Amino acid sequence: MAVEWPPLATAFVDDHRQVTRALKQLKDALGRHDLSEAKRIAEELDRAAGPHILFEEVFLYPEVARVRGRDYIDRLYEEHRAGRDLLTRVLVLKSDSWRRLGDEEQARLLQQAEMMLDHAVSCGTLLSYLTTLDQTTQQEYFAALLALRQQPKRWTEIPEPAQVKITAG
Image (cartoon, rainbow, N blue to C red; front, side):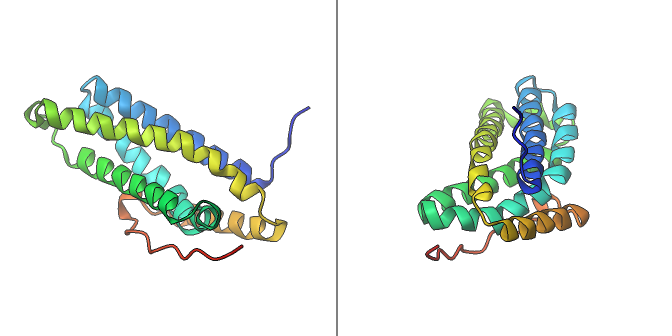
C-alpha cells in the first residue's frame, strides 16, 4: 500500500532528489575533468538548490537543533558553506584553467563535491523532523517553501546563516 505524504514532505523530497542528482553529476564531471560540463551543472545547481538550502537553514535546521543540539547543526551549516564555496569556485573557472589548477586543487574540488553529495544524502533523512511537526506548522512551512521557490535565490547568494537559537520544544 502506498503511503501518501503531506505536501511539505513531498516537496522536500522532490527538492532533495533534484539536488542530490545534480551533485552526483557535478562530482562525475569533475572526476572526468570535464570543466565545461561541471560549470553547466554548477550553474543549474546554484539556481535550483538556492530555495531548498534557504528553507533548510531558516526552517528545518532550527527544528533539528532543538533535538540534536548546536554541534550537530553547526556541522550542517558548515557543509552548506562548503557547497557554496564549491559552486563559487567552479563557476569562476575559465575553460582552460582546469589544467593550471594542479592535481592538489583538482582533488580538493572533487573531494568537496563528494562531501556535498554525502551531505545531501544524509540530510534527506532529516525529513522526519518535518513530518512530526503539527499540521498547522507543516502547512506554514510548505507555504514558506513555495514562496522561496517563487522568489528564487541562488545558493551562492545566500548569506552566512545566523546563529540558531535552540529552545526547548
